[in-house]
Length: 143
Image (cartoon, rainbow, N blue to C red; front, side, top):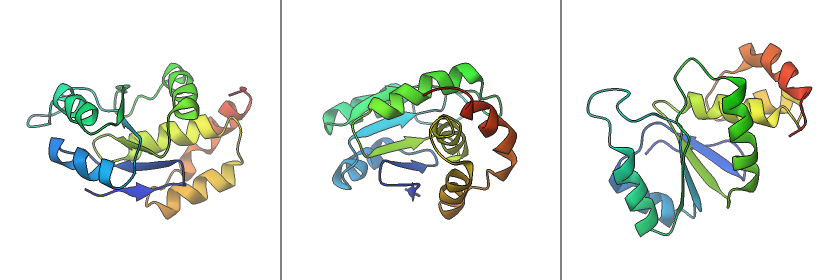
């Protein structure tokens, strides 16, 4: 598992396996968020199987699939309250971790400083500097 900590409340990861769920629980994560749709690519673990493992290991499970390369404002509108209210720390995953990072960044832009958000993502290994215009747009919304 390639867990990348963004801050004390959220970490992101590329696709996890059913077996990885036990390790996520052992590491202290409280909520597991899947931002990857089922059947996005052949051989991908079924989200129902990961959900069952999350329940078995006492993790809250949130399935919030988002189409790769097409994160809409509605996706951010759904992600913002979910991440705010989720039991923390949260581990969110998708194919590479980028989608989760972008969702986090856009929702965080509603209450945080863009430079801090870009820096946190960069420190986790994700370059989101190109999101500046969308983060500025999200900053106009209340979270």
